[in-house]
Image 1 (cartoon, helix red, strand yellow):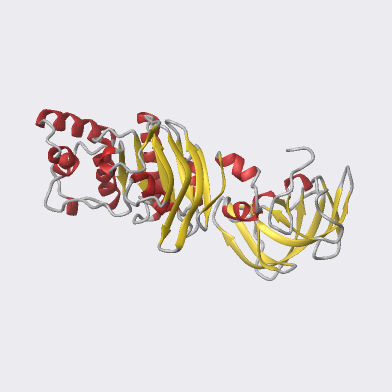
Image 2: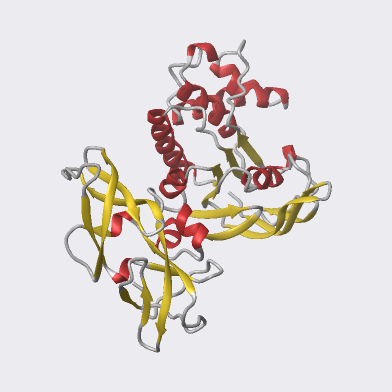
Length: 364
């Protein structure tokens, strides 16, 4: 196991800077997930750690050693890519041990390590098969097993589940989580799927346009997002947003005006804002009740989705024509109907004109 530290890390292609001076520390044994939309720089950042991209500036440390200019093979890392990259003419056993064989490792050691990896990943009954005889999930297990036999200090995963169907993604997500618990190695995992991030990570690093927007535990990012981007990215379905106007920012209470004109009392410290400022109110779909709350509004439902245990109502409120409300699976609201949405003030989020989150006077 080893910790990973990035200091003022920069990556530029020509005059275009992609990674902008990132500072980040990943604790030894931690499962860290880089998450963000396409083009945010998460895979580039992973490749910089791996040594597959050369840093323009800054330092990469693994296990307390500066590896910024060290070759990938000597960094103590193993990487699992989105593509399985298995040798089609080799068996599972041969694929698992090929890297060790090329490094001149003794055959008995190779057999011992491949046997150990196959048992961990439940591949022991598939060792004589070739890749064409395996399912997508089995091929991905072989790719992970090839990393395990190297016994790296740090595992790097670059969207390894993207090629799998929905059921297999869930299965492999659980497998990788169990693998981390069993091995205890430092793991860094890249995905654009925030559900994967929330369910797998000890620490989530949210990236946007080559900058770290926020990092912390999944629950921390969910309950205390620093800004509008993180609030909208973490959570499924995403948080609802509506424009509001600041009417009062007294010492004990904040009053905002909703799109329908009603005034609502909130417990945020808005002392840095001015009366009349345009702010953004955030409401998570799962926090919206059909029964009671501190304030309410009416939603005209355009579409209802019934998923068995849960239902989602999509409708229009204010300028948001894709407002989402979560209901129980027994909800029978139909398109075109109007429903009352009740909100607890303690579940709301408030953001300033620069999209930064206001903090509550009393955190909940």
